[in-house]
Image (cartoon, rainbow, N blue to C red; front, side):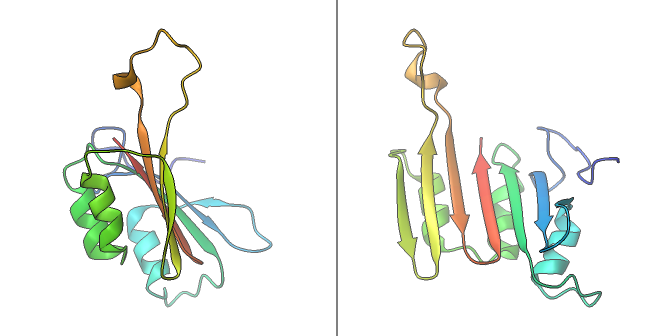
Amino acid sequence: MPSAIVESGYGSDPVGLVSGYLFVPGEPAREIDSHRAIAWLHGDPAGEGAGFLWLHFNLSNSACERWMKSQLGLSEDFFAALRQGSHSTRIERQDDALLAVVNDVIYNFGVSSTDISTLWASVDHRLLVTARS
């Protein structure tokens, strides 16, 4: 099956989506692109039903943060965490959602700390958004 994500650069689609999956009870997970994800989140008239959406973004795409802010209804704390200089690993509750900042674990002690990558995540009852540079 061909990928639903059309690459435009940085391994992502034009809005920075690297991969998206829709999980509906009783069905296998399906790949979903940014257009279908927004339609599903805003009550697609075709009726996707109950389910859960996971969207993973590449923050190196210049359109990514702006698109997430305008389309996904994520908290301002999530975007503040993206811009924060200190990347301390943590999970915080924010109203009905969770914000997580997770750093890679290094098992090779010869690796420089600049090689560590940070993953930011926001999750609520219908949507998991993960992002990294």
